[in-house]
Length: 302
Image (cartoon, rainbow, N blue to C red; front, top):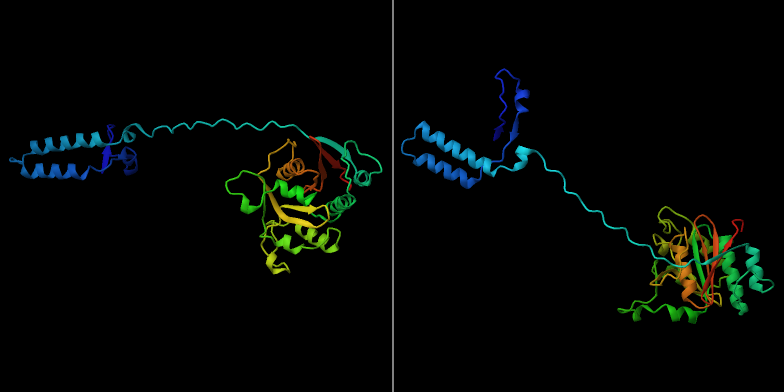
């Protein structure tokens, strides 16, 4: 059905001109139509006056049930309130020191000191940190995160999965089903096999996963992400690991989640040395000395 507007339409107007004066009118409810039909059929006179009165009454009912939007046009859209911005955590910044790779290697040997570079009394641990530095600088082809520390110190911080029930504590989860952890089992960090596996792991790809055509079939399609946790002895504790639930100890401005995880791990695990490499190739070393976090930023030419 169509409802004509009150503006007159000339009989000579074109059909298109007439259509613009018409707006759709919703159909009358079925109950009302049935009632009107019964009234028309049972009217005694059937005269034009009765039909006209019935039509006018029905027309009034139509107007009463017709949505206001038909007459007054569309209603303005409702205004959605804008939520308040969440506040950022205000945390202390670590002390950042500029140095070279050679400075770090000399400090590890204890021959001279970079300012505030913590002493590493264990010779085996110093050698492991030096090997991790070589991996980060010489073999990594993308972003990487290596954490070197005593196995017992890691165990004291990261709770085993079967002990997690309803406890909000730091935990470790692998993101590749344990593939890299198994692959490097019993392989020392100084072994060329370790270096080659690490290089392949850090290679960039569009999917951040091992290629579907990779030679080692179990690796195909698995994520290439996460940290390498290395014991002071030089053997892996966990690879491709997500470090979960650690409280952020500080704020590293203009750095991403990988660098924030490096800060958190160095703060939480006693005596831990964390090496982090960005996708762009910049290398940082994070260590804690008492209650202060120190970041050693290596020159880009490493």
